[in-house]
Image (tube, rainbow, N blue to C red; front, side):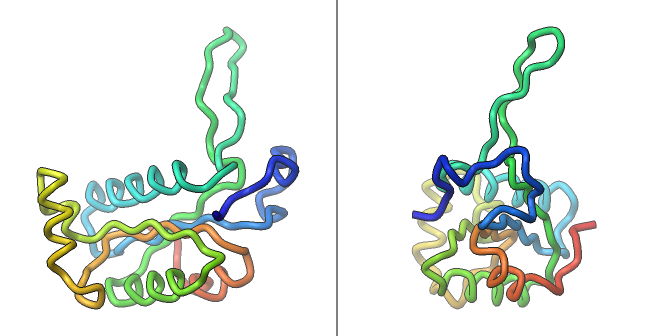
Length: 152
């Protein structure tokens, strides 16, 4: 399992002090709505699977609660389709990384079972990806995504 122990979570420390880093890499060629959807969907899968990502709930001065956000931050980067495929392949090859991806089929089907069937019928090397969310040790992750620009 990839994540943080309770002792590692320090919501008062700078994000760069965290042992793990979180990035989402999105296909730069997508329209803004599709790019946002892909990033959000992979982030949702990541926040469910990686222990300790979300910080405490915030409470405003009126007592209203705002659900916890990622205390270690999340950088959203852009890449062309081929680079995105390479980033995903390199990240998935590491046992100390968590990877959640969105194959293109996810945005081209309206029924989840159809998405599952489309992926099942496509070889791993033939899948196109719209976004990849990765959590892993900072230095190795930086070596994979360090040259990518922020999603603009």
